[in-house]
Length: 428
Image (cartoon, rainbow, N blue to C red):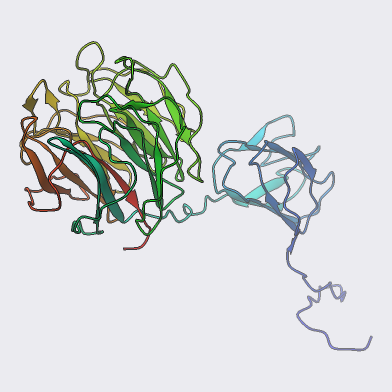
């Protein structure tokens, strides 16, 4: 024998073993519903479109190694099933089902012997993928006395409100706004007249630098006093409101990650208007309160695929025209509102699983037709509104990352009510 012997193993019989070559990662990502794998390989398993059954080798030797990894973090939606192909798996024969159902999981399999068979050396869940946090917000549009406005005010990640910027689309009030695309915003619907006679389905997209684009029309049924929230990390949904026939509606419109608003979807809980909407749990949302035949404290959860759930009752004082904000990274808070012309200063926290808590009173000046949004990645802000349906305010109230609402801050742009606020930008 000639040549250099590297990190080879010399057995007691004098036979020199082959040099360990390490794991070979198969470059083609597996997207099929079935795949047969081989020892010595690592595989990326992408179950975005379907579940996958992985067939292990029919024969194996001690120390054989196979690694499988959740390529797209979708095993929680479409699972992976292992077929041990006649060999045992952790001491059980292959009549047992071995299934992995956790997003982001990786499984490192080692073959032991014919008794225990394949054993997961590791079946870890990797840390959650980095989630971009929304840092800033913009408050736009609204109504002040006899004027409907197209004014915009940008809000920094620390809650400082900038001076007015005019000319941000058709002047209107009673619209809604939400974040989409991970770092942008969309304003839509509303009413273009102070006497509530001009129902709109106008949309304006907002860039991740806070620039509001020109009008786009024809995005579902024209209506006002609508609500909106972001869901699924990069999409949004508008729902409910009052249409040109003065009828409350239960419809919704999904917004994709590019800001395109879909057609009407009907039958999404009790029809009502003047409600609040906020994201929670990182990828879900909640609509709550509002007016139907009377004032309500109904809530409806929204899944991370944009499906609105059935009515849930009994979530605090019945009211309408309230505001909402996210805080703490995965929770929400509803604040303020009114019954008739009586304003409230109460709030209700929403947990990261969508449970609405009891009333907390005394959180700044009582008012309604108020707006809110998340800022700073884990905090929130409420702003503007009216105290008595005739006097308009420009005050704001910051929300801490534990959901505590701070004292009033006044003098932050044109006084007005019934505008809309959306978070935007991943940069502080």
